Image (tube, helix red, strand yellow):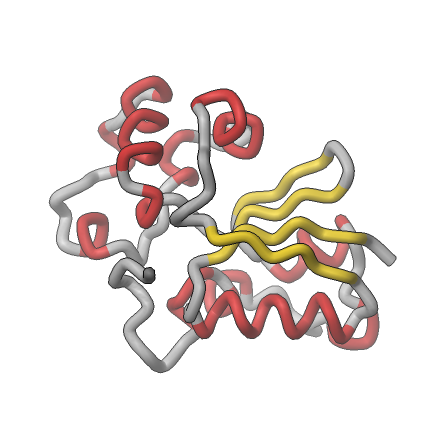
Length: 144
């Protein structure tokens, strides 16, 4: 099983469900606060680089949901600067195993990457497991 560095928003119900799936599959987690981590352009970009810029953003973030921020209008440089300035906008979780990284929690991709064992969803309900959209409480506000 894998040792996964898991960057989350503390208190997020969606992240709690994701962590529970990983632990139930036998993985160990090193949990870090995504909002307070000392990101640099290089360390954050290492996660985001393989994805289109629009997929870097947390679609449940208040500024994205309201339309104040439209991820499709950003280029990579401006998007990275915006995410560093406001980590609540970063799509989560960010996960890392050795030198491989993943953004978001699409169950099928996570299962292919590290395995979810018997707890792997039979159909990839990716969005319901991502971020706080899976939670019943409001997880969009900043956490201390």
